[in-house]
Length: 480
Image 1: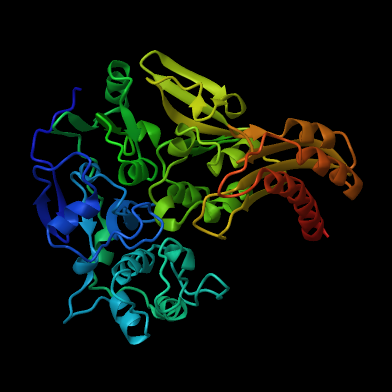
Image 2 (image 1 turned 90 degrees about the vertical axis):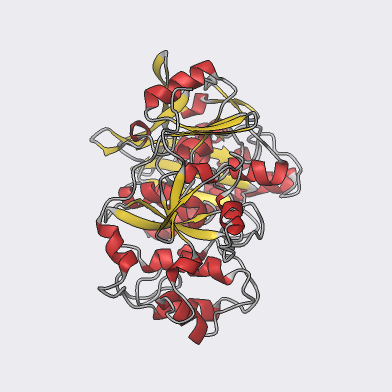
């Protein structure tokens, strides 16, 4: 390892610079805060699903220099925030001077038992300060003040019901001119601090550059790479994982590329899903359908496509969509770079062609896009849930004939995969109900679905066939 901590690691909490101190490198932000008396954030699930641990972090913004971003404190190692700025529910207001979010929750009956309310406060505050939140025509998920209820999709509580919480969210005005947290958005966030932290036989490293990160990986193939920690945090909290070396790559500029050209879209592997969603701004409709169904806003504020693909999980949400988009990955190491098709990337259960010393640098999506696309996720909850089956569609129809079809599947085999047989049953044939029903029968036999606690194999097969029919009939209604 070449990066060394030349200063004592510290972060700014509620305006005060606070040394991280002598703690385990696996200590979470949540535990670190609570050990220092900031007990507003709570541990409810330790998996990033309940939002009781929500806090605000100053991150680079898409519309302002800094954006207050809500994240799950239970998932992040405190070392990952070395040099950063953090605001907890205690830092938003006081009993004598409530923050507007706290005040609205109180007067509108949104205060609950107290366990989860501080998490709601922080997630709601992030949306309160979101640049671009303006008055708009309300719909089922947006208030007249532009408040997006998806901001609270990762905050789960049943104490009082959600109506008074929604009422409080929709009552919020714009921040006042003297609001310090609003003013903070117009100056840059702290740059990522190169970090070296060790405890016992474990170490946490934030390299200063991609070259340094790749050198470390070439020397330590056992290193665990972390970006948003939305997967590693669960492994540490629930399964007791304690990596000997954790290497943080989320703020490396070389992994944060974003460009839209004439022939392709390039997405840096360390961009968060929220950053990608806002920067794309509707340019890829298939991903627009995916984003709201990928966990919650709290998770999307930290999760990256690179991380989702890097785990090799057969039930990740991004692979089916990216397979339908015919995406490719740029893999990089000290030995150089290579580009691989995503369709050839997965080799077995949580296994890929990526070598231990390689990083996913960029996701490349070719243009032009197919004109008919959709993303279907079958899960027990509409939002913030793991899929039983996920399907991405990209179909090109001209003069009533299917010219091309790409269908990505997740949750029906040991790896995400393309539905090749179904694609062949569609391409070159009329885009009609008869063709689609025949192809749906083929699609029901794709993959090797298993029985597990989420769904049976027969259910998964049935959902594949029904999904294709739903895709066809929905497209017919839209195109009518």
